[in-house]
Length: 297
Image (cartoon, rainbow, N blue to C red; front, side, top):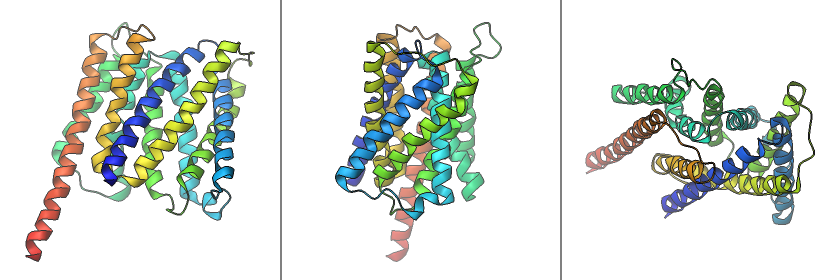
């Protein structure tokens, strides 16, 4: 039952993220990136803080000053900064596809950080996943998307954030983590201010989109944290790829994008590579359990 709940939470989070990405893409055509980060980050933090107060959730606690929590907040800040920047300068379909390599990066991080053993097949899948990224970016073609590297940086930060989320102390409420994440995003916008254009006065239409993007971001972020903390990672992780489906459809239907065949092929390669790793990890875990059961009998 817990895993079914985790899957449902993950799918809801991915659909909400995809819709929020469309709003951010539209907003980025009218406002500087730093302004978007400050408004959405601060507004989302205030909304979450109000919920914290109403639900009497613990907010100020010594654990939020621990290294792991601070690193997670920093990763969240950088992922938002690079992601919004990428959305503003690169087709949404390309950014969404590249973001799906996060699980592949997490697998590499597991080797480097936790000294986990990765099979040869997994390394091959990871290699093919990054070939998918090259297909999307097309570095040697005339349609080279140079700003797509921002999406890659965002993906590395997302992977770091997810790894650190599971290492965060269990007694820190998910709502508290989400609230600090939003304020971290706002800080990222402040850091970016000196390097971007001056702030503009948003139109009523843009204000509405900013409000919608903020609410969607707050909801999606909280759902993702719940899914990550309360579900079996090997089971719920593959459902991250539903974001790619939602994003591709919205990019075509709402943004009128026409992704080239290289982007479609790259997205499929990334999806297959990640799914291969998840399925094999699941089978490996099941076989371990069976082996232990056989020994006991």
